[in-house]
Amino acid sequence: MSKTYEIIPLDTLFFRGSTPMEAGQYNTVSVFPPPVSVIKGAFWSAHCLHEKKSFSEGLREGGVIPFDVTGIFIKKSFGEDYKIYVSAPATWYCDSGEKAEKGSDFKGKTLCVAEEEPLLDRFSARSSAGKVVFAEPKEDAKPLAGAWISLDFVRAPRRHFSERDILLTKDIYSLENRTGVGLTPDKRAVDGQLYTSSHLRFHDGVSIVVTFENEPEFNFTKLFLGGERRIAQCRKCDDFELPEIDGGKWLSLVPVEATAENLASLVASSKIVTTAGWDMAKGFHKPSVSWIPAGAVFIRKINSSCISLTETII
Image (cartoon, rainbow, N blue to C red; front, side, top):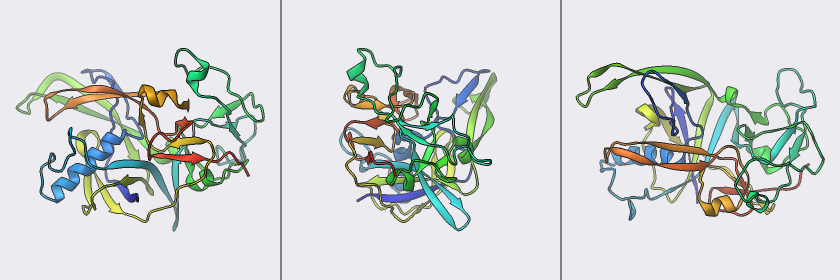
């Protein structure tokens, strides 16, 4: 049974990808949503601190944190009401030829669902190119990958979007440039080594919701999240029901490691993201890992973070 927790950022957040941070060079924008390893590490660190244990205590064989992240969501408040949003399925498009009502980018636009076979059945090399086939052809349809769709809409897709069905990144956070300085091992500033990165500043009423499987009962109220260990509030919240239907295709609610097995089942995805970094404990580089972003669609349920997509549109 999954348990649900809400993360309310109290400062900016930064989730670094694989882009090197060169002195004097502008760094790329933070990755979002972050890989599951970032969420697991933050929660396990906070749990160990609260229980007065070392980070390594209780790890499974091979140094694996003993619980799984099954979903990363966005919660947005609308006065006394709120909605839960999931990463938009990569097979979902909207008809850009239709005029949206004023004040909303998607209100009144039509949902189009791509009908694709697995990528590796069509290409000898893995590629995002190729013709997208719709049940009803739409030449000017735009992909919704990267947007967030309300959970209610995913449970029961409608032909036309309403005002609160979709969130774009601009509805979730704004970007803030932050500049830091390189430090020596004894914490002294290094001349000429200035670094700039773009952090995420979440809007008021917007938070991150995470579901876990097999986790210990978390009793802490604060945690440090992402690069620079920015503080965030954490609290247990009510669990919510995920769709349990057999629609033939599966939507991943979290980034999934781009293994050969997972890529073989991939139907559609946005651009694969590579992460790396520096292992503070080992004092050495972390290995680079490629991730299929949340919102990817597969022909099978590859893990417990996948939910079935219905093929019925109201």
